[in-house]
Image (cartoon, rainbow, N blue to C red; front, side, top):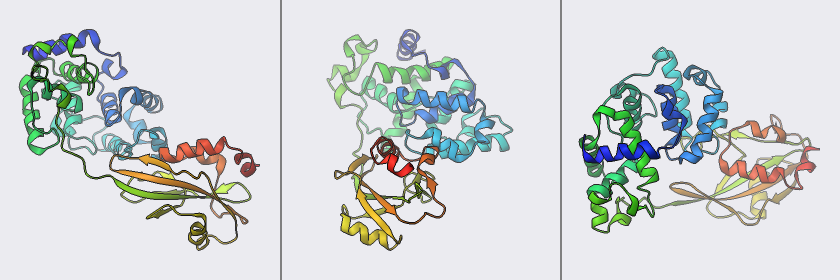
Length: 353
């Protein structure tokens, strides 16, 4: 065992958080936690993990659930392809693998939604396979301690860090070690303002010696953020029904529900909305702009400049859904926040009376 891995394991024995997926080697629970925690902080992901385990204690129960129910439980976590892949893979495990997860990295990585990191985590934690995990926390610890200046998101950098992780890992306690180095990056070697003065690795840390802690790890710049203008049309008839549609394209929020959407190059004004909406719906009673200031919803590679328009109709919406039933549908956070505000407004009693 190297001094590096020994120090990490010793630190972990006294500082690790008591998280529920650390008390099990059940691959279903470990897999579920890893998928939820992708792109998500532990504090945010923990309640979701608990909800999923409560609703689906076993993988076959998740497999047999309705997609709408799964997406509703996932609502608020973002990156909804994770939830769709989670559901798809649960079905595959149940029907094609007789309810049992593959017990090797090579078998696990064949499953949808499971990449190198997740396959390494499951195979090492649940089946003691000597596979190092390399996530954002691990990149940071390795880059700083060993003074690596290769970009972590470049092909050359990813290969280098994977080889380095393999060299310094503790193969004899691989599951424990992988969890330890991830926890070390999350709590000790943090992205900003790490407590270097009390770090057990400080004496050998090249970044600390060279005063480069704040600049490591190095990442290539992301692509330019795309700006989009969304105009959501909230049709409401005299019975309190509205229109809801399912997103079926390959873009953001696939399979989530939303109000009819008009995407434009710039913000639309009321006169423009009348022209856009009247071609779709006859006998409009009134169009009301919900709020003058648009909502700016930021995603990883795009910003959505959004307005909501209340369109009152004189006639009943055929095939509509009631306003009271909207909480049953999985919707993007952007819409969930609007619905919460709308429900608590003075408008609401008018439409459901």
